Amino acid sequence: MVTSLLVHYHPVDAFCPNKGCTCDDATLVVSCIEANLDVIPITLNPAIQRLVLKYNKVRAVDAAFHFYGDLQYVDLSHNHLVSIPTKSFESQKKLVELHLNYNKLSAVTNKTFDGLRRLTVLSLRGNFLEDLPDKLFSALPQLEELDLGQNRINRIDSTAFLGLNNLRVLYLDDNQLRVVPTTCFPLLGSLAELHVGLNAFTTLPDDAFKGLNRLTILNLSGAGLLNISDHAFRGLQALRELVLTDNRLKKMPTKQLSILNRLEELAIGQNDFTKLEVEAFRGLVNLRKLDITGAPLLEKIEKGALSVNLNLETLILSSNKRLGAFEEGSLTSLPNLRELTLRDNAFKTFPESLVAWPELRKLDVSENPLECSCKLLWLRELLVRRNASQVLCSQPLNLKDKSLKNLTPDELGCAMHGPWPHAIIGGVCGTVVAFTALLVIIIYRYRRRVRDAFKDYKWNKRAMARKEHEYQKTFSDDEVPNYIIPQQTLRTIPVTEL
Image 1 (spheres, helix red, strand yellow):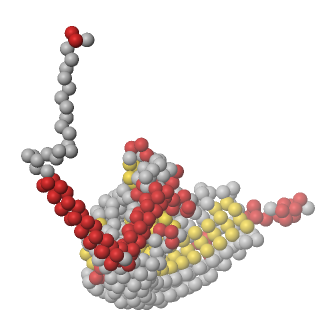
Image 2 (cartoon, rainbow, N blue to C red):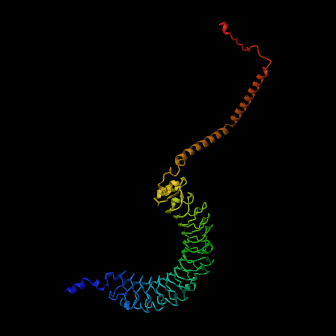
Image 3 (cartoon, rainbow, N blue to C red):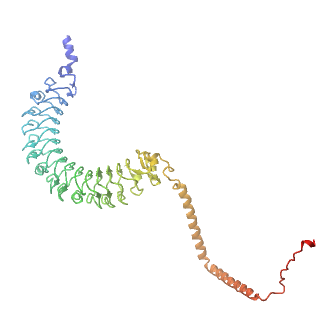
């Protein structure tokens, strides 16, 4: 009786190998993470569908998997797997996802994955693979996502991907490829997403991605690119997102990009170009997001650099340490711009006419060496209204490290630049202009009377002048009228006479 009670209340514990595992018969999930396992346990419920054995010390895939024919998900990442014997997964007819990333696998063959007819996701990231032989994945007709990143792959056979007619996502980043594996791509007609950055291509030849007519995302970050041929992207008519960050491009590849007229997102920071020239993104009429982050030599954005990109909604110009000014009108042609990031550049000020600031949904102008003065009063008021993040001043010294939006107009030196002085000056100027205009109208309307009055004034003035002249001429120095009494001389009375 006691025995039956134990079986009734502790069925899960009977199958779990140790305290580091959780086994749930209701959901058919077994999870043993950091459980210090060195082998795959064989005492689990045979009906389990999900098995997670991450961060253990398992060294081999052995016959244990034959006990679990209902598995749909297996995660053996971060173990010590060195090799996978042939047909190890032969019983896994229902397996959909297999994660073998971050182990020590140095080789796999076209027999390694026998039996995995329904597998859709395979991850081999972070192993020691060097070569992808012919027909390597031919046993995986339903595979949709394949991650081979962060290995040591330096050679890919032209037929390595034969049979992967449904593959949608392929990671080949962070390997040792010296040339783009163009010969493999015609076998991947359904591929939508390709990651081949962190290799050592140095150049993209013409038709580098021939056959990938459905590709929508291409990531070439850190591919070591020095040069891109004029027709490198030919055939990528469906491309929507392109990442060219962290390469060594000395000039914006305007001509090469111009054929990607359906491109919506472009990231091209961490390159060595010094300026964005007029129509730098010519042909990219559907571009909605542009990210230029960490371009160490970028100094100038010319007027008209984005003049053809009228659909641009998000512009990120961040951590460009030499970028300190825009040419006047360089961003005024962006009617749909809603998100603007100008963080961590070399801007000392921002002109109010640069962009329609109030229409932005997202704005970040922090971490710039701003000179806080009355010229930035408009920005201070904008930041207050939006309750934006802190924007600190660098100059003058008395305002250093103070938040712009917390400063008063007086602290910004706006005592004579506030609204009331401007209103008073404007009122006075307006009054003067109005009075002058009224005076001109009156003079014009009564111009005849004014002219006659002016003539009378001039005639009277001349007449008075003549009379004065005649008066002065009548009395010469020798002729004195007898009615003019000469001044009597006062005689001095001696004191003695008193």
